[in-house]
Image (cartoon, rainbow, N blue to C red; front, side):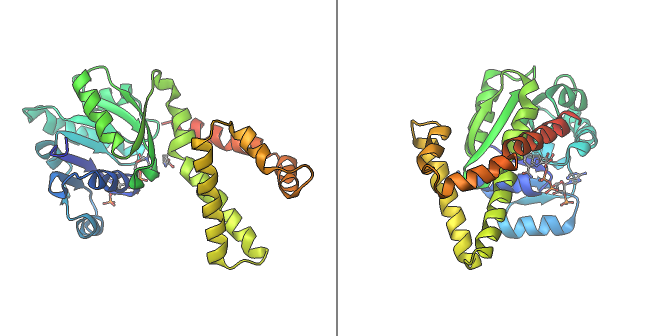
Length: 270
Ligand SMILES: NC(=O)C1=CN([C@@H]2O[C@H](COP(=O)(O)OP(=O)(O)OC[C@H]3O[C@@H](n4cnc5c(N)ncnc54)[C@H](OP(=O)(O)O)[C@@H]3O)[C@@H](O)[C@H]2O)C=CC1
Ligand SMILES: O=C(O)[C@@H]1CCC=N1
């Protein structure tokens, strides 16, 4: 699999995260092509990854077996109309994996053509460190071999979740695609509060990060539920009780629910 030529349309944050995951899994930079319109982006990508770059998106068709679409959702139709022309002349049809939030397999099928082999995927940024979560759905023309290949590719970047019902995709956007930002926000707030309580920035960051990594590792490994683990930290009328009561007074669960519904609603609107 590592010798498969792979192209990215768009070379921004998400393309680079997946690229980093694939390169760590021993894909060769010489088998990678990134198409991006801005010269500065192409130069930065060449310097960082020593891979191939192109200004023209259609080069992806002659180069690659698998093409990741890593542009903003609103641009997917535009880049698809370019690629579709080149695909008509191609001997072999590439697998198209869209990373765009909220763009469905039906939309992809319409943009790339009824015979195209499309996947709608929703990864997240920790793909860059092999800890990503990608929700994915296969379009109607994808056979078992191509599904297996896409699963292997995405698994280089972390866990892969094949959705039985594509209508679950907005929930994946809200709970995985956007979710790293919620954790970063929480860390940002904890670091700032710890500084106000007297720690240096560096110590505040170490305390927040180590507590976060410790808690997440326990939540992943323990047979106990997160509610039970939370109770183990909380002494009756102790310090944690005070903190959790303050969160409850400020309706933290409702705040989280509203935020995730807003993300899902946006995903469903593309
Ligand atoms: N960021 C994230 O955490 C996640 C993002 N996604 C999805 O990934 C997609 C990309 O997001 P993200 O990487 O954050 O965005 P960025 O803005 O970081 O990157 C977008 C890229 O698209 C390129 N681009 C713009 N126009 C064209 C064009 N006409 N042809 C080819 N490339 C073009 C830009 O090139 P240039 O730099 O040359 O202008 C840029 O490299 C989105 O659809 C988003 O929904 C999904 C999950 C998580
Ligand atoms: O914010 C966004 O729209 C993209 C999709 C998920 C994460 N980033």
